[in-house]
Length: 161
Image: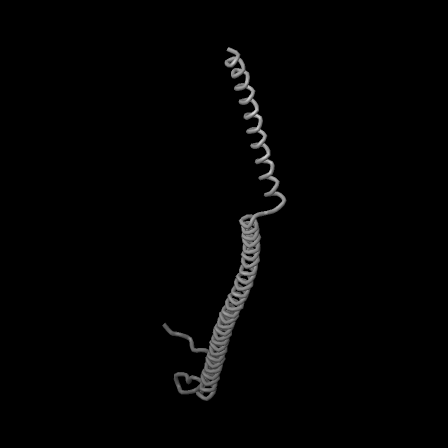
């Protein structure tokens, strides 16, 4: 029994010792692995860092390109708007000029019509004046009306009835 009794004591001590060594090696392995990654980066970590930096630079360039493109498009829109405004202004000026010329022609036509009406009125008045003068002259040339004996009297004839 001593053998059994001694074996029974050795097994739990051995198991406990193995367990402690196992835990110690696990802890040492984890801490040493972490320490090596932190102090000395591996090739993969360096590549990842370079790729990340390159992606950041590309993103920054993309943002800058978008800003430049936006600026160029803004200038183009502004120039297009200015050209459109100049065109609209030129069209408006041409229309206004055309309306002014039309109004001037109409005013001139009305003025000529008014002058023609005035001339016709003056000619009609002159013609009427001449006609009245001719009638008056013809009355003066005709002798005064003669009476029953062919003699002129200064009195008006009396009707006999």
